Length: 68
Image (tube, rainbow, N blue to C red; front, side, top):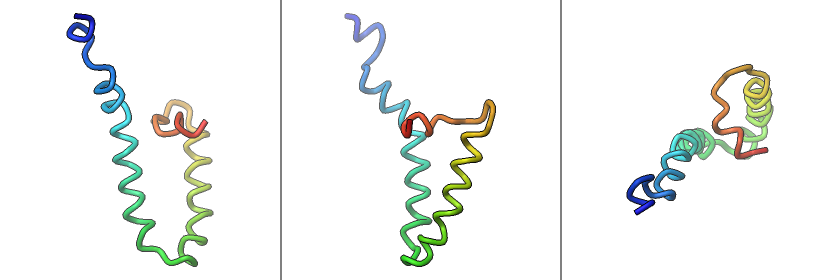
């Protein structure tokens, strides 16, 4: 009865994580085509993106909660 009232907790979790999964899949497409040297060069860019995301005041940090 509670499940019918509140919905499936697993479905809520999946819905919550889906935007993060989509973002990761998009990044994977870009990274997969890189050579080892290209990936090493991209590391600085990734660090910069992470630093910008951490410094945003009210930006979309939904993906960051998984890394803390």
